[in-house]
Image (cartoon, rainbow, N blue to C red; front, side, top):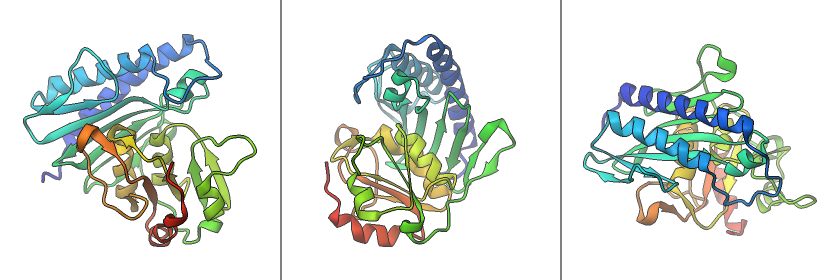
Length: 272
């Protein structure tokens, strides 16, 4: 497997920035939807995906394309054994509510293994990226790129858990079980995995019974290249390109120091 991927990373960063600029323009004039559904999709999602797919296909025409939305640019497996996995707006609910909690996610898999990822946060402008064997980096606040390293906390009761927004007055099953010292809530799995990779949280747990490759692919390699571990809830290895691009073993993304103990406790977490 190639370990360079510099031209692919450059292409993904460029595609994310172009799409991010488009999203930001649309975001300014978008009328908020306070009660937006979790599965909401907008014309901006589709416009962003079309920008990304056209850019990547123009540079790598033999690569496969996998995206969440139905767009003019067709998705398919390609002929190279490589697949670009795109979520054009991850956390569309955050976009629709206009709380800023959404991201552009672009991942690349080779032989069903994630080797490259870019997560761009259009509102803040923060971009976090990684390629296999070259670490995870961020240009937080548009400064010089800095290398990301996960936190070293070993005890989750002293650590930080990041999750989706919970219902007011309720605790999610992971919070009830793990009793973290602090809980961060936000939309977008891309953001959640980016904050783990950047050392702003210790663990992200996803207990959904089924979700899609594009929900986690780009964020997956951010965490692992920052020194963390990503697995299914029971420690399963996560691969991509399965039937209908579905993941069915949940997700546990955490610091390496915490991961073994967390896996041992996941049996008590109900899958939803």
